[in-house]
Length: 104
Image (tube, rainbow, N blue to C red):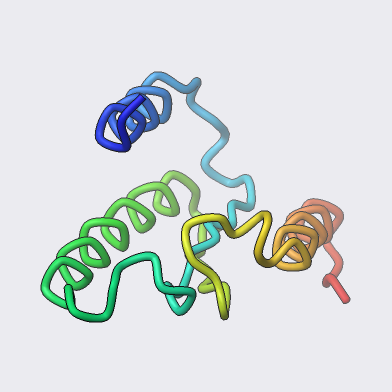
């Protein structure tokens, strides 16, 4: 599957997902792109891609009144593999919010 087809499939999946309680905490993790997902000589492509992804992440975060976008330092497209601690921290933060406490 091409990246374009995969993106289209992901968008369709998000659009068809069941509506959640808008009060649920939601953390959208965002790669900061410092691991070189776009070659340095293609800065225009990088800027266009970053703007598109940023808008998409904000749209997802707005699905909850408690939605936030969190940049993950030193990451590119594969945040779970590159920064697994960020995933664990986001999960802990959501659980803490649901319990009414703060994550450590």
